[in-house]
Length: 539
Image (cartoon, rainbow, N blue to C red; front, top):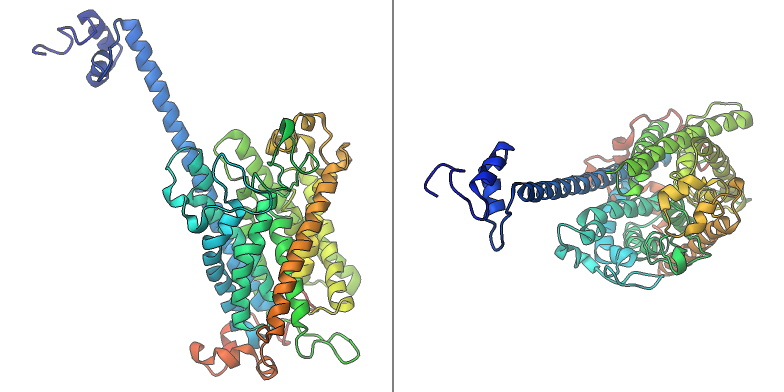
């Protein structure tokens, strides 16, 4: 074109059309693309050209908005995973303060190594067993069988459903949950478990036992999943599926029951029980560390529960995430207050560590139902969860004679079971529909039947929640009981008597920490009395 732009016809556009488009503010490149498109006919009138331009601009805006939404969702999930991983530090500090100082370095190293070993196990096997099914194809309801070692994720497109389902961010977030589950056991077997046995345990739980339960409840093909639908959109199990939003059962019950099996089969620490069965005190050495660990765990829980919504880039999703954060805060607070006054009424003293236990119990209790209950219901489940913890802790130690230094079973197993059952009582109808939609509930969900009993729902939801409790208890109890039994029979489970009495730090870590007494490296806030204020079996 020899003249000025618009002085001559351009492709299919007349001079008048080009001039009009310039008058509307279109740039020369845009006009050229409309009038002289590659491989096609251009527009022929001003109206036609403007229509095509606006349609293209709208499509570009929608594409940009979609990309921004995906970016927000991925960033949200990654950041939630970071917060969940901070819980590893919380568990480590809590456990360190809950045991005697002569074993402090040992348990810190175990808490680090279960994350390390678990990362490899979950990468190679665990993620595939949990979520391994080809997109668009069915798998069995028991276990996944695809994407081992992220073999498919490495080939996944950067856009579309396959990315949001199998992307890197999904693996990272799910691994952070696996790490939290695995580390629950560390305190229960503290002061007497061999290092090698613990590493083997961490690999076994994270690569097989835990992922199978994840597949049951959270994968769209799991037999307990609310998202595993068949006729008319109803879930496979009792037409409702289990409500376990962030894992009172999947995470906490699994870890708590594994802890019970380990502590029971391993036997009590030397001197924990007198010959007549009387319980001897073995207090932890630093209530300061316990408080620090509690706050770190509570902080991490704000990634654990809200992050379980997986997405945030819409008003509906943001509403759910915000509500979950509120119910999480309220349940933790209610648990702490409940335990504080419960201990004062029973022992006539204010107990800081008992309050920590109550906070954690409240958080465990609300984890399953945090997205589908009202704030006042979160207070109820948190307060009751703290009392259940105290009762279960007493029964475990004084009746069952199981030496669990951090009360892992009482906190995660017993309270986790209560948390799983709670939606069967107070899952609110409008919240269930909001979170789960039609999946797993079908049109009947909008008739108000498949919700908590106190909202007029029938008992199928509560029954499914009970089935989840029994299934997790049976699977984890059998698998981990068999596992620890075999290691015990092979002589690989427990350290020698002289090592245990001397302290595992002195036996194994003195050279690495540069001191004849490595326990000096764990004396932050040591209580004046050896064991401080932790009391009997509390954590």
